[in-house]
Length: 278
Image (cartoon, rainbow, N blue to C red):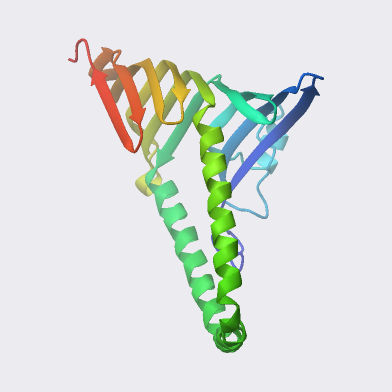
């Protein structure tokens, strides 16, 4: 909410349906297979100019009366669907294989000057409320700090016990690190369409300015945690709206870059090759 004290309070709303499934199958030889599937259905983000009067129902209606009675929301992100599928395989409690697949049917978004100003106003109001709350409980925080100092004094005599616990913790971390090093990871990402349109809506205007698009995004990577190799490609477009012709014209002609990713230890290398750019 922008400001709930105002009668015409604006707000940004997000809605979605979520379906999650989990299954685990264990065998007598110590092998185990876990499967997680998550479906995000009709995920959307929109703006209501009046949080108390406008309708949250984003489905279009043929009834003129219902459309007039409740102003329609202004979408920032159109309804989209997403599927996430993960499979983990174990042998004697050791995870030796993990695969993750992400599939998005399409992403279409719009951003305008008023939307940016609204988001900035909401965030500034939130920071103001947090500052007021922190100021109101400053005395309680000071009392808690004094109590922590007293507790610390009581624990000065158990340093040797802490050292024993830290040594055991180091052993556990080492074992987990060894287990992670034998896990093979496979990641696949596929996105049909991603499109973002910038709109100038100052002083009652509604003029499209720029449109950024990514299509047929396909990326795959595999390897161990210390050495992952991946590659992918996508079709990219950037267009501007010619108001005189009332048509979109390219700023950058459609191109298909190829991206290669290499992660070894703490180093990450990204190589991008563009066959042609106009």
